Length: 116
Image (tube, rainbow, N blue to C red):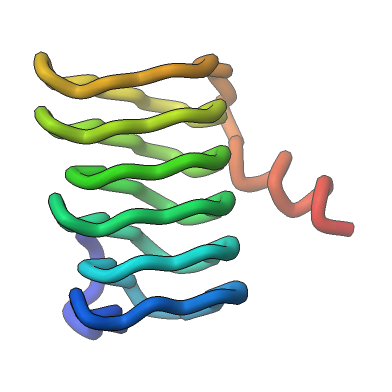
């Protein structure tokens, strides 16, 4: 992940609503809402139901929603259900990916347009 400062959502925390952070986000708990951040790291016991707009996403846990970012890494054991709009996608053996991958040279520009 990018910068040294992280926003941490701990394993005993559940957030219902959107999360917006200029820094990187480490999700160890549960979020039911969209996340907009620098980079997102979803821990192996974490879950997310919502969409993500970020520079990069590393998914170890489970997510249902769409991702729009430059780089996505689905780690072994990850469970993803949704569409990914990205420049670079890597899926490790053992990751589950149910959805579509839509390549884009500038995925964040598309996310910004759809928000307006």
